[in-house]
Image (cartoon, rainbow, N blue to C red):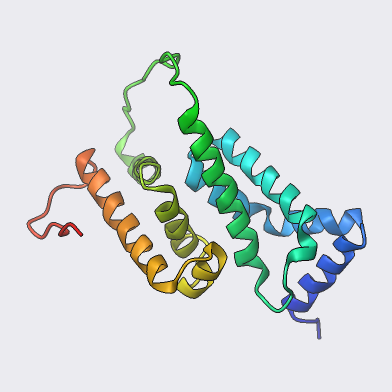
Length: 192
C-alpha cells in the first residue's frame, strides 16, 4: 500500500529543503497546471500567466521553509500565485496604454464552435472582475477549493470570501449581459 499523498508531499518538500534538484522539479511538475491555470484566469494573457507562474515557483522554493506542514500546501501555494497575479495586474495598470498595435478582427466563429466562443467570452468578462473577487472565484470554481481553504489562503475572513465569490459571479453575469453574450432576463440579479 502506498503512503498517502500528504505524506508524499511532505517527503518531497523535505527533499526540496535539502537542496534536491529533482525533488524541486517534481514539486513544480506536480502543481504546474493548477498554478498556470489560476494565473491565466486572473491575467488573461498566456505570457503574463507563464511569467507569474514562474515567479510563483521561485518564491515557493525560496520560502518553502515557511510553509507549516500542519496546514494544507495547495492553498498556501495558490495564495502565492494569486499574490503574484495581483502584483502583475497593478503593474499593468501603471503602464501607459498601447497605441492599438493589434488590428481587431471580427469574430466569425461557426456555430459548432459556440462552446469555445462562450468560454472565451467568459474569460474576457472574468478579466473585468476585481482581482480579489476573480482570485476567490477561480480558486472556488476552477481549483475547487472550499471557502475555508480560500479564506485561509487569501488571509481574509470566511464571510468575505463568500461575498467575493458571489460578487464575482454577479459582475461576470453583468459583463456578459453588457456584451450581449447572455440576454437580459425578467429576473435580473439585484444590485448589492
